[in-house]
Length: 194
Image 1 (tube, rainbow, N blue to C red):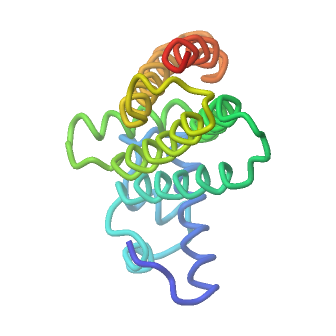
Image 2 (cartoon, helix red, strand yellow; image 1 turned 180 degrees about the vertical axis):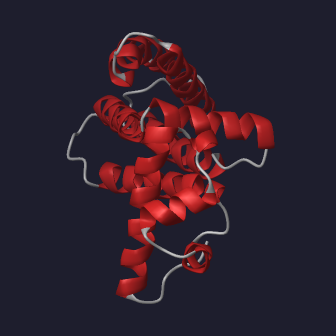
């Protein structure tokens, strides 16, 4: 993926991404071709390839934006409690999954399982580092147990995020991911940090 050098180029890239995501939400990732994405975005193949090397790059770009947005959200939190920060970051992350929609999240996971080229690595790495930072802060303040390293807690919480998001994808009821996950995570985190 290339970074645009002009504001016009950035707007074009954002437009392609937004229109592509909307189309993927309607048709599913497997049902969308490069031609479909170009048509929906109103660009020629060459223009698409100027910003993205494949349709998978659309998903990768979405994940990269999510990581940046999650970090910005955390930096803007004014909550004093590390526990509350942790819960707010998790809820915000779940809201991001909701905005993408079940089909796109499922497509990302399915792509990951089939291709194995780790398009979710930026999310996994970024989220784990952010969780580690919050947990370390909580340990430094004496809010969280120091029985385990922050990396251990962060990895467990991230595993719970993935587990709950799989449950949400498979859930036939129209429950939000936060409704499915937050009570479970609150209890597990309380157990881990208490």
